Length: 174
Image (tube, rainbow, N blue to C red; front, side):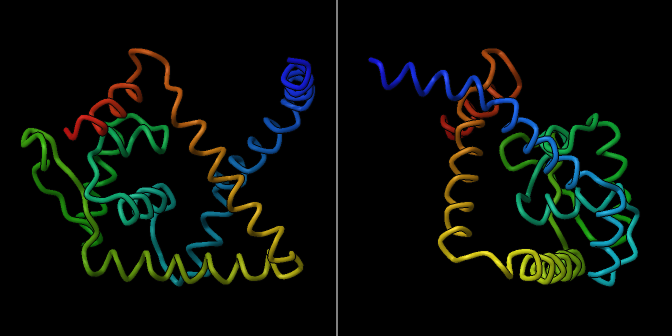
C-alpha cells in the first residue's frame, strides 16, 4: 500500500520535531518558575512540590499514592510524605482505598477545592492571554489532536508494566 508507506516515511522524518515539541511542553509544565508564577497568580502560598499533587488529587481524586506518584514521576514514599503534608495543611484528606482497604486514597477538602479553583482561574487567565490571537478552528484542532495524542499514548503500555496492570484493572472494574 503506497500511501501507508509514504505516511510511515513522513512519520519517521518528522518524529524528532514532534518529540522536541512534546519535550518543550513537558519542560514548561515541569518548570519550578512556572509553578511559582501559577501559585502567585492564584494567590496561594504552597510549597512548590505540593502544587502538582494538589492539582492531580483535585482532578483524579480519590487517588492512591502509587498512581499519584506515577503521574508525577516520583517515588510513592516521597509522594506519601507530601500528601501527608497536604493533609496537615487541610487541603486533602486520606481514607482507606475503595477497592483495596489496605491502600490509602487522597481527595481534596473544601479548602483544597477552593485552592484548585483558584489555580483553575489563574490557568484560565493565562490561557485566554495565550490563545487570544488564535482562530477558533485552530484552537479546536489543537484540542482534538492533543486528545488524540494522549489517547494514543495511553493505549500501548509495555506488557507487564505497572501501566498495563493499571489499565487491565480499570477495564475489569477493579
